[in-house]
Image (cartoon, rainbow, N blue to C red; front, side, top):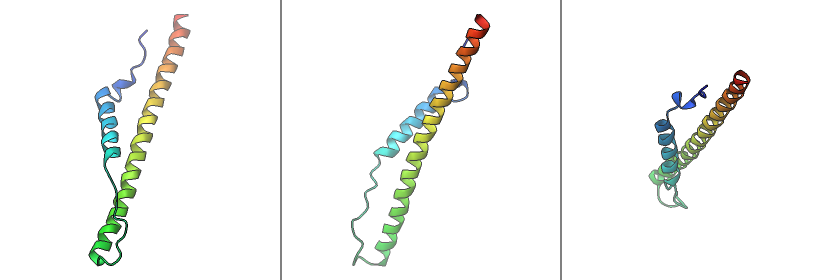
Length: 91
């Protein structure tokens, strides 16, 4: 009996694209200016936008990592259950 192929739900290419996106996302530099003092109101607003972007950047990276872990664990569960059922059926 063939094992259930989790990749039929999440293709290998989609998995690889998500991993590549995470690597690219994590490689992006999000360094913010150290101080906005005395540089004007516009600079302060830009610095605030930068802070929000940095938080968003960290959240997306966290989301990608958790999604990849979830998919890996789900695949392992499918394969494990399929192997148990095959053993019961096959004797």
